[in-house]
Image (tube, rainbow over all chains, first blue to last red; front, side, top):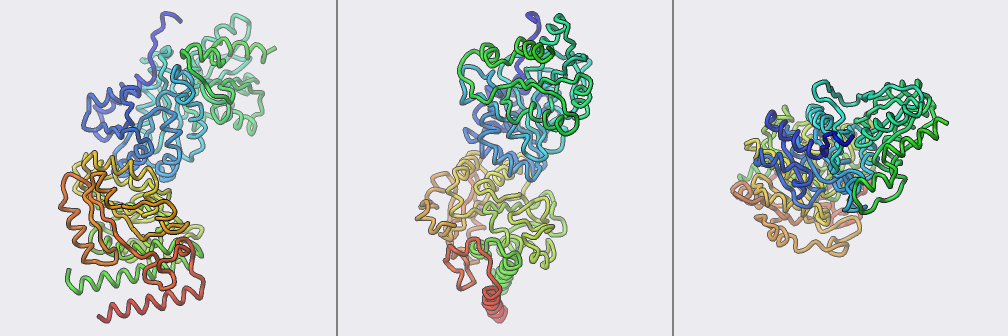
Length: 313
Length: 281
């Protein structure tokens, strides 16, 4: 995939905010001293009068956004996933989730692909935290096209939304012209019958690549992109699980509490199916180049192929 | 303020206190101490200061009130009921299953509640966000937030105050109920927040200290708050926790405990006598 265009979904986020901002005056943005990194700075440059830096004070930012939403505005509040979902958890739970306010949390730098900053900044717990809040929509787009669509869908959705974006430039795997997006709807990227690979975020491109390799080895893999982790596209997950009889989940998140567990919970109740979870195996990350870390932690097409081959023996 | 207006406020405050006692007694739980210390303020806000419309609680240009010290919901509920947002009988359903009167304020259930609160330190941020939004939208409404003196031990409060000053939120009025007590005892012994006014001033707020049981002083302070431009305004009001019920006054133990039947009778008798005295003036 050497000639494929690569864009970090945090860039998509900033660009989408700017585009939406031009259409909607009720869209405002909060950031916590990271506008350059979260890319809300792109919006700030275009609309300086409705971009509000809160300084390094995420707890206040989250609840100020909640307050602003009660006035009829649609705030996007941004920081790194670690500090938005992590530091801000209780604020999100009590001041956004409980009153079901119309706040969108744009969390960038999710997962270990943050890279060199190391474990303190590599959030692999945000899906778990955000999934556990009633009424919260949790999304993790796979590429630029999907990320921009997800931001738009988040704006149009009435209620709280958590969006996770990445720091690392990732391949653009969708064709904008033919792409359509809806919250809660998964996308079958490749049909298959032997094993269903359900992926989210940057693992989607890895899953697509893995399926190609598996096909050469005679294994027919179905690849499903689950951008929306909550609410899960249950109908689609059940359908591919029934069809393939084996499911592999892939996420740049702790295997505890994320997509894998959401899928296991569904399948165990409605369609017991053997599952292998690929993710961060309940450990902290560390410093290093993003690509090397992803490889080291098994978040790669190669590892998916290994797991699938073993699974389909 | 005329004598008759002051008399009406004093009567309203007595009725708010009676509502607090009725509610917490019926709930067999709740927080009377801080509800009573702020009862005069609740009466002043809902009968003199806030531009609100009980018939249209979601009126877009209304003033907002955020009870950052959300555990004193019984006081807020009593004031809202008295002001006509919902029937006073509802106070007897406080904390009951199915009631719109939750243990801590819920903006989606109770008419007149502008923000769900209860987790200390957050309401002030919400109020600042409302004030910021009002400025962006060009609304003339004002936003009021009531904090406890124990609550200001939360670090987020100071983040919010920095934010309010940074964005020149002169449409925001921060009120601190300085009743001096929190669950574990005297605020000064648990984690000393003093000097409160000086700290608020240091954060750039125009600050005034008043007696929180004196309507004349409230009138001066709120007028000054409205006249202040360019910075948020803070009122630190010295109060007596449990004010109006003799055995509850200045007792930390009455922070979060309901009166039993006997205590209820005593409290209501005392408050009825106070009301009769006010009305007889």
